[in-house]
Length: 147
Image (cartoon, rainbow, N blue to C red; front, top):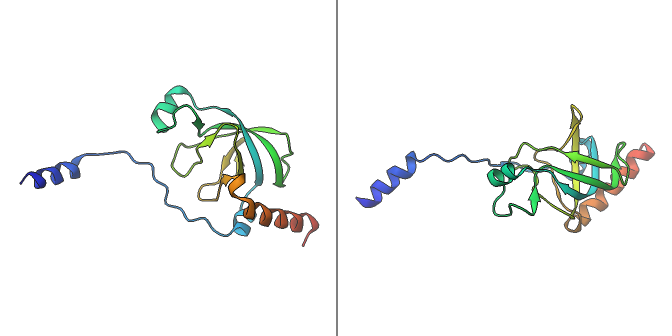
């Protein structure tokens, strides 16, 4: 009887969940579908204290969804190494949670003057994405040469 009551109570308890249900495609498809492909270092965390309290757990102070990044290498389009841009976020589990000082491989788009990581596209610390970066460098060379 007690188990039945617990089960019924659990069915009626509501919980807001921000889940991500994505499968990333091949790197070449992600490259073609991006406005910008870069590696970039996180130079500033931009989430407010209230956003951190609501959306970040368990790392409330060391991470951020919205960040300033310094481009370290640009593989596609007009962003230049050394350029600093801001990344916006919708605060979903599909959005990267960035750490200050880390370098990431990012597939970006720009809309209304705001840069965002593309939902369901790969992103990772550059140190863990070396094979993908090598493939992207090859794709970038081919694109620039017109092949």
